[in-house]
Length: 257
Image 1 (cartoon, rainbow, N blue to C red):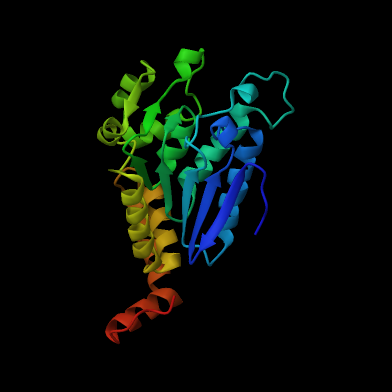
Image 2 (image 1 turned 90 degrees about the vertical axis):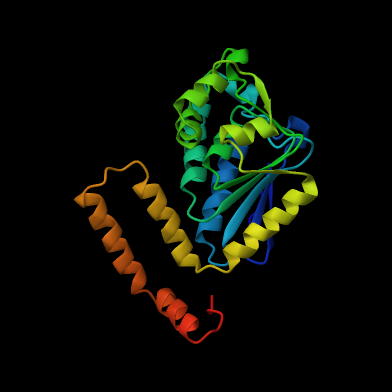
């Protein structure tokens, strides 16, 4: 396992948890955290023993967005600017090839919603609060906007981003920013349930399924798309994993993965 300065990782079975670990800074994303999160996700992608990743925060806040000290710096070295690193981070979350679960507690502000928007499952504590607070600081939610709009739609984004108002967890569910609401214990149980379901699945098929969804989303229904899906199915159904899955089903046993 790699060691990090702004995050912590822990493995339990086939599930890796990534903790945002700058509680004294409300887990605000600075240059180091942006790079370390990308590195941790790349590591998890390439580790065949990891089937899913859970992202959560230490302290009383999931994430207060981008670190304002970093955001206000001028003359940063090339490649270390927020406008360079943040899109790469959010795109890495969105395109992460395995199931990704976020547990959001406390405040979820600004750039934190770029992480939320790319996750497959967002579990929100009853007391959590969400806000696109950038306009109240003289900033704009530029780098998170493609992912948030994709998740909840243009006009809901207008209503939330243009006011900068804080919404509660129930409103976040209604807006589509979160998928499950509950107490801390309820969310732990639901997270365990999701992970148990994911661990039963064929790992390569799960990755291919997520790749399929991302690739097909928003595309025109035409012969080019149909050829892509046909070729992908042909590739997967001939795999050793698919053969084992079908064999196990016929033999009424658990597959060996």
